[in-house]
Amino acid sequence: MKAIDYCRALFEEHIEPAVRDSLPEVLPHLSAGVIGSGSQVLGFDDERSQDHGWGIASCKFLLPPELVVSLGSSLQKVVTEAVPESFMDLSSREHLGDNPICVTSIDAFFEEHFYGAHPPGTVPDWASADASRLHYARSGSIIHDPSGALSNRVQEFRDSYYPEDVWRWKVASSLWLVWHYGDYNSFGRLSHRGDGVGLLIGQGHCVAHSMELIVLLNREFPVYWKWLHQQYRRLPKWMDETYSFFQQLDSTSDIRTRGLAIRDLCEQLRQVICEAGLVPDSSWRNYMASKDIAAQIEDEEVRQLIRDEEPRFFCW
Image 1 (cartoon, rainbow, N blue to C red):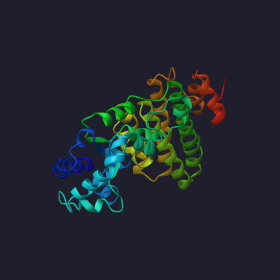
Image 2: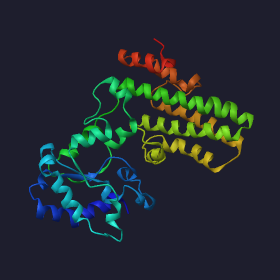
Image 3: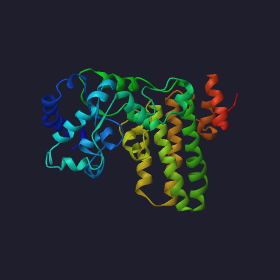
């Protein structure tokens, strides 16, 4: 049972009829959906997810600002009272816990959860934006939105992405970290020294940054680490070419085998960035070609940010 299916059924069978009876003037302006953060917003929730922030607690009720002021409290009361003790064999009211039904405006909700009512508008804002929050902002499922206001806001985030040179910087950063934790240290040093615990630390970083890289190459925003693997598994490009290396790391404790899997993963990633058009061929390049890609950046504002924040890539 996914939270979105549960909330949709609960809304249609209990909440919408109650609002229609008590506050019919609200319905044309109401937007409701499973949005924000958490596994349920991504569609990754399972039975284990139901112990917190699940069910009706994950459904947000949004109104124009003036209606939040005049009718927000009344709507919150109607919705809360409409939630039955149990629904679809689950204790629906328990999901609320100490969290009241969320009634706010679209702008206020996006400001609180995503640090901006709209996508970033400047190069510095894009460069500093939290990638996971940007991914959540374009995720979720809408249950009720006759005005289209919430749908339009989510679509605005789905239609927005990093400026090209900010994206190249993000890709270069991920590649440098793959090189540092993977090719250079995990394979080149820790596995040869027989340091299994050190290798465990390094390979975890290498795996995470490799998946982040593939997400970026698919022009998506990498999500919070716990759900990064699930996001990666659903990507249309380069997942099939790289997943076997992660499976090898998952299936063995042998230090040498793990080191070789990381080496082979890095070799495959060289091929991937070539296929992505970032380098002319898959030849070995120092730092996993991260500095070669950073050198392609032409935007002066991005170059200045790199000089201030990640000077190892500053080459102009």
